[in-house]
Image 1: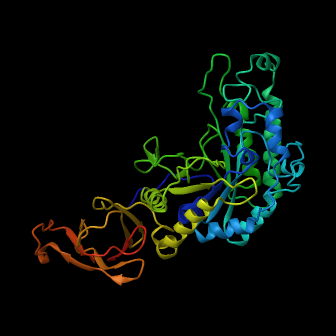
Image 2: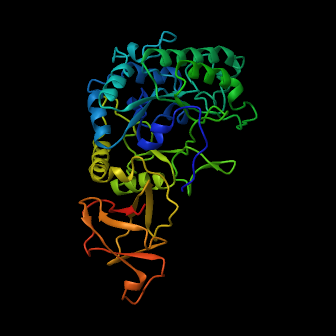
Length: 426
């Protein structure tokens, strides 16, 4: 049996079945078009950043189309940035004027999004930033957009994070209570280990993480919480890399999710051309599931409210593969069997899925599976794959006695990543 992850407080049973979700990073930074960290990276003062607020008018915003694209891609849940580090809110918060209803958008952008995705059958999650470079109570630290302005730092050195903390908790309460059941609450992030000499990073004491989590659990006891409040969580969230194996904590496997981008940027970045090919994205999804994990794949919508055409093409490409191969993803996890080189296994009970990253000439040798497979087929079309054991093999590279050999067609199936479905005996 593959490893079993440690028990969680939130209900992760659906999460480890569905395996694939959509991350959405959207805000007024899309108007800048230089990703969600532009305010900090470029040390943009509030008065300049206000231009993006004043010109945020997503007239092409159609959350129903977003939801349809996500469903077509095979995604089963979504997580949207209600507020990122710049402090701008996509909903009609009672606690600030810095929100979508005061921009040319003139409306709450979260409510129709949640409704549209739920209509398509996807579960809903909210990302909420723990940082806030706009709020007057958030201390000026080494990530703040005004960190290099010594006059500003001196003038604002007495900021009291307790005032911001109550704002953080108040806004979280709004999100928990206004949009129906939440399946995921995704806080981002703690950095108490940072030390800039003149300022310190922020962590669980600053957020009062225990009280924050208690409030979340009071509203939605089964909600999944991520791991960025410095006091555990239901899931681990490696970002922008693929773990080499099942993620563990203290040597024990845990529920985890790889957070990945289409082109290296989370928020819309017009000039970033590092778009990952569709087959690479599919391989990343397979790689995650083969190690017991999920993948949360991000789209940064444009300032006019659309998914970039390249993002749409990527989602459609993934969806084309998922339509034929999703049963090698949904409900699957790691396998105890060791795959051949350039292949990955996923497994769901007595069905073992062999994902072939490099199509071989004629034969694939599966160690440890002789006598254990009753039938094999290519998943894209359901066509039989012939099998033979070592004693029946007449080639010059006969495998070991415990090895099952598959005889493959010369032509690779016309799919991004071919999958062979193996039906195990018993």
